[in-house]
Length: 241
Length: 163
Image (cartoon, rainbow over all chains, first blue to last red; front, side):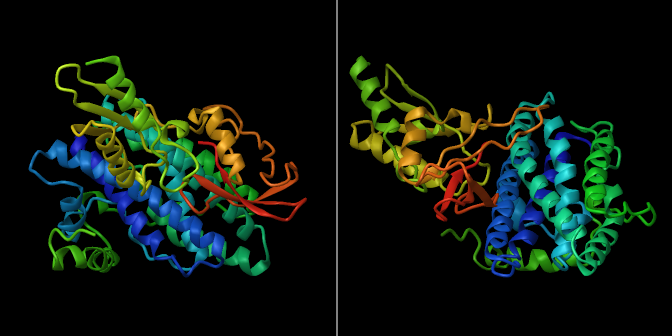
């Protein structure tokens, strides 16, 4: 996966699946303001996903639009990283996931804004501003929960430890891609280690590092997510509000 | 194409109000980028840009623009959406900021720039004018707003957050 089509598809799938997971918090967040915040972040991710998948469809030139790509592919055809498809877990797990996702998307979109592909540059220039707010929000909660009570600290560290194995997949080298994710790792590490230090949390040790999302090899969780996301469109092809 | 036709098309489009913040026009909001009238055919091409990528109001705004042009005698119209340069709250006009404040929505502070450490600037309460305010949540009733509260008069209020 190196060309612009694969790249746009992978980034679009990251954003789409992240949006679907975040939207699951709607009506279930710990407080009203947080419910609205997570729905807003999901909406931003969905906006980026629409732009990226629309562009991927045009690059492919096979007549597939954003809806065809979102609703009519099976799990093995999705190219998102494993991180975004993992279940939400408790609020600490969700915030650990959001911190990692935003600290990855922000330098990625920023680099994309300066790349040679005009469409990807426009999408990056737009999405990075929104990612900066996502990062602020996740960092705020990771600090509050991590540097909170003994119990909240324990759960924040546990949430972080749980999702940390999925970090290396984000930065696997793609030398031919419009932006090589491997070049973003130092930026990510600097951002995350600062937040974790303020949160009195420990950066987990590298170890087991599952991957495969970029090749369509997913965890069992993605199939269930897609079943819920796609059921209406598959039952009523072309359905519109 | 007479100048009057160009002006009428521009005036009609500029007066379209934002469907989520109905006190402000799309021109005030800075999302209206261009209105062009083909001198041969009279076809109008309007260029707009979204505030946020996921802004759910874009379809309504496109429909409202076409409706406003039809009423003003320009039935042949196309609405294009561009994403670059990315919209900034710095594009909201002074008139727009005044309308927001009058409607109880605190206008944005200047957007933060790349490489500059962001400063937290005081957001004044749109009700009583006090700078003694606090943010309740960075995300609010629409994608472009945050939720704040005034410590002086205790009123909660929306704030268009800098982007």
